[in-house]
Amino acid sequence: MELNKEQLAFQAEVRELAQGPIKDRAAEVDRTEQYPWDNVEALKEAGYLGMTLPRKYGGRDASWLDAVVLIEELSQTCAVTGRIAVETNMGAISAIMAYGTEEQRKLAADMVLGGDKPAICITEPDAGSSAGDMTTRADRRGNLYVINGRKHWITGGGVSRLHLIFARVFDEQGHEEGIGGFLVIRDETPGLRIVKREPTMGLRGIPEAELAFEEMEVPPSALLVPPRGLAKSFADLMAAYNSQRVGAATVALGLAQGAYELALAWSEEREQFGRPISEFQGLQWKLADMSIQLAAARALVYRAAESGTGGFPDMLMAAQAKVFTSESAIRVVNDALQFFGARGYSRNNPLERMARDVRMFTIGGGTAEMLRNLVAGQVLGKKLPQTRDGYVRLAEQNARNKPG
Ligand SMILES: Cc1cc2nc3c(=O)[nH]c(=O)nc-3n(C[C@H](O)[C@H](O)[C@H](O)COP(=O)(O)OP(=O)(O)OC[C@H]3O[C@@H](n4cnc5c(N)ncnc54)[C@H](O)[C@@H]3O)c2cc1C
Image (tube, rainbow, N blue to C red; front, side, top):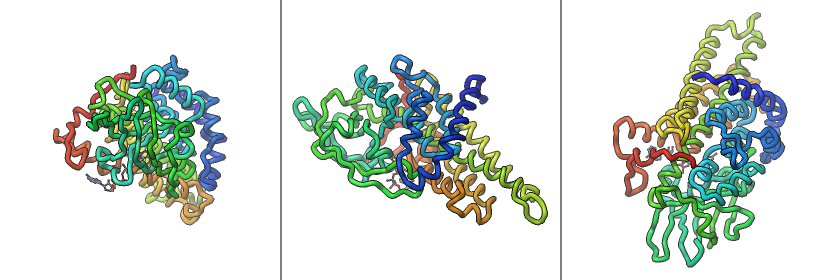
């Protein structure tokens, strides 16, 4: 699949920003572990925040593939900024735009276009891969929901204002109605506490935090209810999450492409034994393998993005793209670092940062193992375990919902 003329022009436009100020700040963002507000401002000015949102809400009606082009270019020089582009165009914001009430859509769109990166809160200390076992609960009490629980590894915890919080929803009689998502604004909601920030291996410019909800009161208007109702809400919310998986795969792809280009240039510059190291066949084959993995990864990512035209990306294609790209990217970045010899091991070399950053993508957003389970379930036409004691058919999960 090739990009069209407009997409190629857009790619060139983004490249200028990515190879300019974004690249210049990347090392500092990593060293200081500060959220890159300057980069957010640059994305905002360029119209790249919320560009997948409908025009009616201030977006550009951009396709998932357009977003992939944006994210890949940014991630070549700064994966943290690439992730900000993911989470302002995909994931939580796309779920809200697809299923939200008019009021919820307007609120979320205004926040994203104004520079907020929404946080999606699914994982808990005791419910990671088995997300369906979450224990955070929202109890209906009169004209409010009261939320109690904990979430862990929440990207943007402490900087994001808008949160989409997954919780088990109970009616006034204490009957469980399903797993729903609540829109909560951090600094306007007592009871939401940032417990701690995790010190991470890479991607240090975005905080990963543990959150606690203690008797947190929210109005029923904060509950996001997809058209099929609360009982099927978790499956529908996870269908929206496929866009974020494609986004995560794209950050890994961008990191790998950036690393490959550094290695390629260095292989022609560095001389040993009286000739450029690119003349050694051992390194030529490495470059060949890197380029093959990149081409295959890009094809899978584009295909997954395209599958979401008019809805959300296909669950199987998104999983295939994320597993292959995240694992290939780790290999490509590692091989690129090897080209630099000792210089690759220096913290002055961007590859040292990229090698730490890229390690995340087989973990966050569904581990490679869990996504393989999902692919295998589809291939074998089997039921997939989703919770400790429950089974949900993949076909059910894969319900594609058209953003309204
Ligand atoms: C940088 C980063 C950012 C993140 N951001 C967010 C976020 O914004 N919001 C959010 O909600 N979560 C976020 N996460 C959490 C992420 O989604 C979870 O880490 C992931 O789902 C795995 O859960 P876990 O870490 O508890 O691992 P566990 O579930 O404890 O798994 C441990 C190991 O066992 C394997 N395993 C578990 N079950 C199976 C099985 N059935 N078959 C085979 N292998 C299995 C896993 O693959 C893994 O290798 C983030 C994580 C990271 C690292």
